[in-house]
Image (cartoon, rainbow, N blue to C red; front, side, top):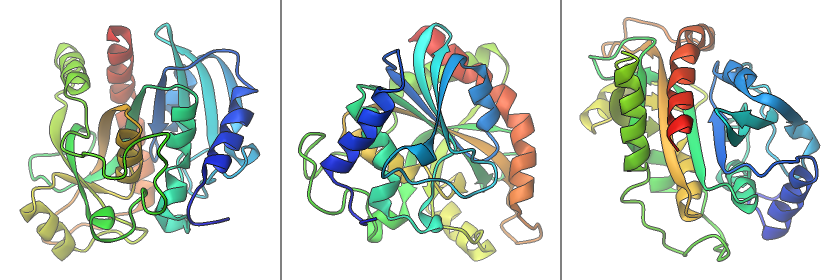
Length: 278
């Protein structure tokens, strides 16, 4: 499998998905670690294992089922990616962006990116939701960018603007839903790192000084590809653990999955409220 995806690969994958669905989804949802149960809310779903889609980066991580779930939620035709692949699994940044490219080929105009993240803002607690207002893209900033390679002109320009990755209207909608449901969603900046090792206390202090409020191992590559292709993006982090910047607590993936049980009902409320308003 090549590091750089091609239009032929994107179109082949999109054709397989298109041939197995009977509705035209306009909204996509990508679910992070421990957040997969939200896909159970989709009505009359068509389910496609991502292992059956050519060229698709298949997730190998616990808590990522690796399925496309296509159906309706709050009356809207929606495509849910239940389990993403990550750079740390050995895929290239370009390959990580293929699912979003397929969504673009399918005519999906809005993408909701969710993740489980560590809270480095001292005001955050495990179980909080954070609406992403911007991101710190340490990997793409310094080298492995998902847009590296020949530009795919069918999607966007060689040098796409990233001054407003996350859609302000969608953030406002999500905040309104949060306020009405007393969920106290935060707004903050997400730092995307490579993983799979969790961050050191010094890493977290550095990120906090740089303005980050939460840190994780996904989302940023997908957001960049989505914006390159002209999609609207809403990003939501579920704060799975509160990081002590002095290093007195220990992070684990099991903790992340357990926190998902608290986060999923809140996330479901916000997603449903946003969909109802679109």
